[in-house]
Amino acid sequence: MFKKRTITLVIVLLLFFIALFTYNHVYKGSAPTVDTVRVEAQDNSAVLYGMITDEGGKKVRQYGFKWGTNQDLKQMKTFSKNINANQEFTVTLKGLKPGTYYYQAYAINAKGPGYGTIKRFIIKDKHHQAPTVVISNPKDRSSLPVGTRVKIVAAAKDASKIENISLYINGSLIIKKNGASLEYTW
Image (tube, rainbow, N blue to C red; front, side, top):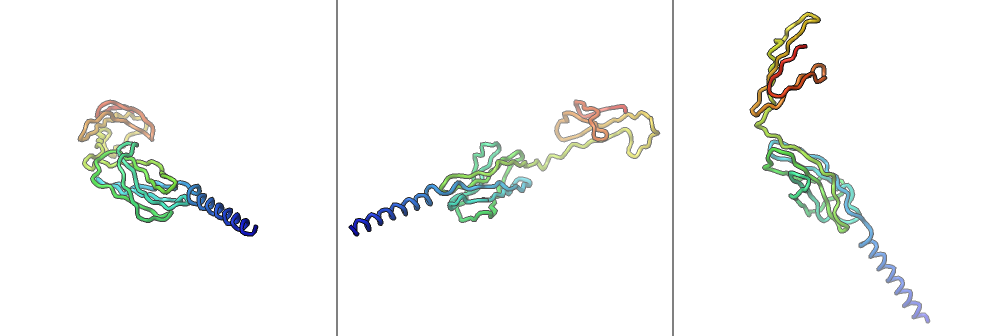
């Protein structure tokens, strides 16, 4: 009788520890929580910053960034070295052409992937400058008596085609014309 109770007790304890092990290693935990922190974009490169804010109770085995020229994010850079929660990680992208890029930080543990927010950045064409606008009338530093009508003449120049030109006075749009020049009597 004593042996039966001992064997039953051992079996119950063994089942309890198997259930506890299974719960802790299979069911407990979640996918990591990841933050897509920021980007530092320059001429033809960008440094992406991400952070794993919560490992989800499981060791993060892979992390990095997904990126691309649209939100499909087809390109990836993956790391598998150890990282702790709240430790920033970065990747440098080089040889980028002018345009809009999207990026997202991610991390994977035994429970699956966790993703940060998809963000975007722009690589500007360093050879393209803003259009130049010249106001030919009234002349610079002109003074006019109160109540005088003023003819405003302006023209814009750019390396590419000017589509339209707008005149704002005190922050309000007064006139918008197609082309590169305008005249307005105020």
